[in-house]
Image (cartoon, rainbow, N blue to C red):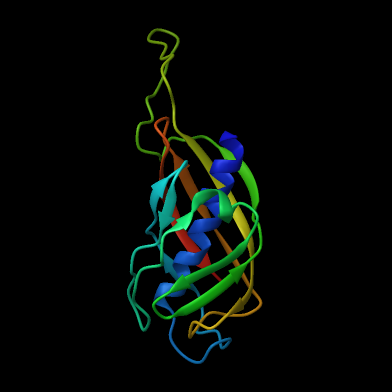
Length: 155
């Protein structure tokens, strides 16, 4: 269940990139980045507004829906995306991480960090390359809060 929830968090981040593009739909304007993501593992996620030519928040989406791909609606249009590929990594960049040592072992709950990558298959948002690629990193805290660990990039 936790892996599915983290997968859902990782899928949400790619959609953040649609907030900062400019130009006609399907015409790439170069790399697009966005660092925002808010939500919970058992509820919904939302991508806050970014900077650049397109601004606005996504509508809240059930986190579990994101794990299999689908459509997200923004004030600037819609984005269709595929389920991402995930790789786990050390959560040293995540909120709630506690460094442990042999002298002072920490056995409490730790956050999880996943690197993700995938494809965007369709979009009505200006400036987003279709088909396009995305990658980034997402954190899931022990309490289920989802956040961005590293900026999403769209190519």
